[in-house]
Image (cartoon, rainbow, N blue to C red; front, side, top):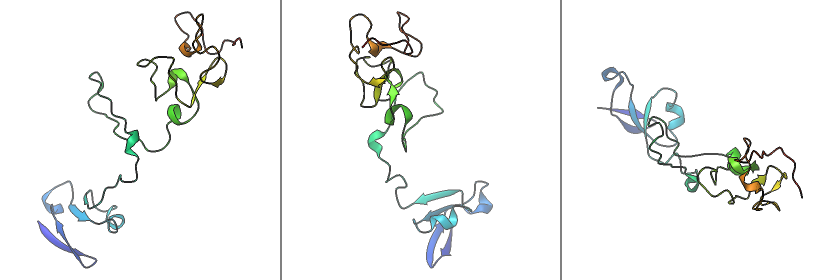
Length: 149
């Protein structure tokens, strides 16, 4: 360990570059980080860099069959199939394969009627539009087919 002075502050250099091929580890304040981010490889921060993120939209799914090397733990910005109008079968809020097809979010629309969900035939007995997909349903009805209003 080595102590260095930066802008009148004493910083503890935990791993000098000559001892390790990975570079230095330096404790930085928010003001110092921009100056050092081009030269240092590892930082110990005295602030939460994610404090402005809305973690209420945190997406954690425990699926045993998923690859263990990649996990999405947060989202930043809009998501197309959640924050913009989308057909029901691609809804990110209510996944088609794991939720009732009758459920819909405020951005779902009927792909047959091209109107916000629910349409007049959303849960009809003969051919419910909530079951439509781009691949068709088990009856072969697809989104592109015309809608009887």
